[in-house]
Image: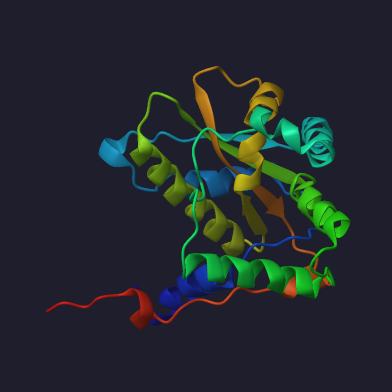
Length: 234
């Protein structure tokens, strides 16, 4: 691989970030197919290729948004309904510890600060949270599932495939936002998708063209230097 190829790959990786405001510009179906084809080269244990992807646009997208947003609004009004909307696997820990909770708080307040949402403004926070389930206006939603019979390693496999999707999309001028928030509403999502009972929702990804004029898309999260998370042994 020559220097220019390295630069192109590195640029696609480092320029990717979670976009939270999209244009309504349609995405060509063949482009989506190309992204998924190259992304399927992700590794998987003994080549099981456990991923399944639902590409949702148009009326089906509108149905998904309407149903899940209605559930989210009801949940906000009646927090006691939370037990009805539990994810099938824990994405976050039950008890947070440093430094992870510190980074999480920095991320949350950095985003809210940019959007002029102050601490205690619960209605503004709820409105921003609802934007997740409006796909931040992205015209395409990708829902990734695995068969329930598969182990946790398959979630690692599909995670690598999802990363490929986001990088391949960026290389083609598209942007993405991975969203685990949808997992709470997996019964609704899987029903709208008409997915079989043996499938489990792992993640959703909003796909489209970023709105270059929206301030939210200037929010870029920091990364630690290599020396902070790496142990070199010789």
